[in-house]
Length: 298
Image 1 (cartoon, rainbow, N blue to C red):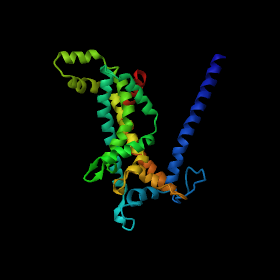
Image 2: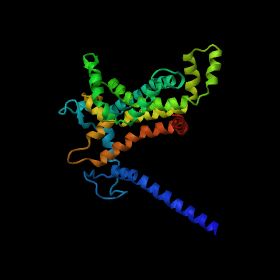
Image 3: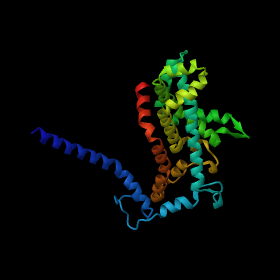
């Protein structure tokens, strides 16, 4: 009797898991179907996972043809952005955001983890509040602040380094919170032993704490990269020169007021996801423990 109930429970559990898997995978399969659809329909209303006449035309167009929506001079096609230029800008901004999040975040997190100072508790509480804010909430102050700084007569806001700083400021609250939680788990005895051997505090931080915190740093790198890779609201507001636009901005530009080329939109979406997936698999061995420890000790 008990064996029969156990079998029924296992069957129900597997059916539930299959339903969840189908629910999660169906939108992805439909995006792939749209990307392979040669009709490039502007209002997809059919549920066809295998479109008639499936081809890679949308991928070829995205990869090798200029983006006519993003040109310095619309009448001159040679001034239009290409996939390779957009990819370069996106990688530059996203990697720069990750570097800012790791370097500044690790330094601040170590201070919050190891030292007692006035405003320490209020500071950590402030980071929680900042984590709740959407990125667009900081748009106006960042716009004014970065516009006040000029580089070569041009506002820092309108440059890719300025965009990195804006994204980095948004990624720092999570970075500090996550890294601080992990630093709390690093045994202080190891640092004390290094100090007794003659190491400075900076050397202890670089050669003891950072190597032991690789999982949390991997999580910070991934989240920093993703925040710079997918964001487009700040970028559309800050940047003025199309030669500095990113892939996320190109994807947004495809959404027309009355029609959208869904095959090309889906193809670009798939191509955009590849670097993030590759980075995830590269850091996968660290990510689970980094998230768990940061969450538990935060």
